Image: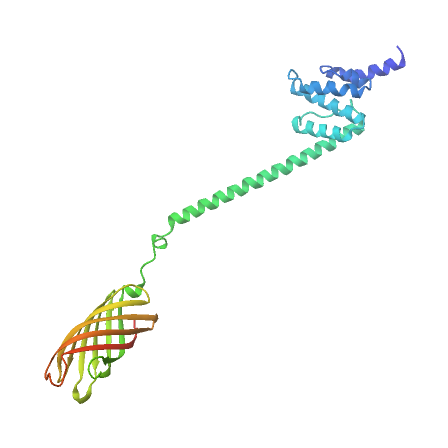
Length: 288
């Protein structure tokens, strides 16, 4: 046996255990370009086991490396680490530089997989925290008192008792247009109001007026209808209807304007008219 045949035998002996795939003889003879398509066919052969396809990929990468195709060889070794992590490159069968390249490719893939696992874990943690926050929010809503979610009540001012001292000026729009002032107070609850007024007059002709009215609306400006009764000392008594408005620009004050028509039963028809048309305006001070 020649020396060359002996060395070839030494190279082929370690491959005997992997003799179940084609192309090993081409690789052993250094015919790497011819070996490439054979190893690719072995990788795609459905009759081969996963282990056999992994061996074919190793030899494909080794052939590429021997041809100077380092990028392609690295790509095949990384794919080997992804698809067949249990398959290692045997340092007894391949050159040390190729074994080192395979180790580097495996580290790259392992770093990728670790990063993907950490990203997946972080995403799962985020989703779990969001789900827990939604659960806590739902539990808080269920335990919230009913008063927190009921619709707002109507403004308290229109539904509670109120008292308002008032000062008004008035003028009789018929005849000679007699005028004067009055002081009084109005009490109300909801839309209803009742008021009393004292009307100072000359020569002991003092008067007293009573009103019962209703307000419309709940805003700052409220129209008003009322019935009015008035008695004046030495003149007579009467009554009639009133229309007007109430304006509350600030909670403390209410501005008032009314026009009323009253018929009187007078003591002396030659001195006093039986019908008056009175316009009045004033201000009220809202105590509560």
